Length: 126
Image (cartoon, rainbow, N blue to C red; front, side, top):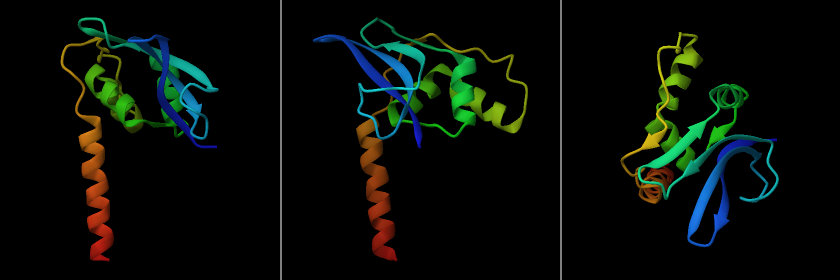
């Protein structure tokens, strides 16, 4: 079973909020999940995000891969730096997570297209 850390949508029409969950990669977006790791509220100004650090690091240690959007949230909140230090076995207690995102997350679709173009170029060269 491949685990993935991704967003699970909630809320009414035009007023979404998201839970950050660990789920089996074969499950649908709003389907069954393994554990809730945090939440993300994009409509708040600035956008609010919260992660349970211990649970999230535990799932990353188990090999769960974050989706592109969640990886961008990790980067904006500082969780990616904490994860890098935790992987190396260094002390990360001095680092703190941000709870709001003042700048918009990077263009996920553009980054995804660039990665796909790179992969297609690599296949042509082979």
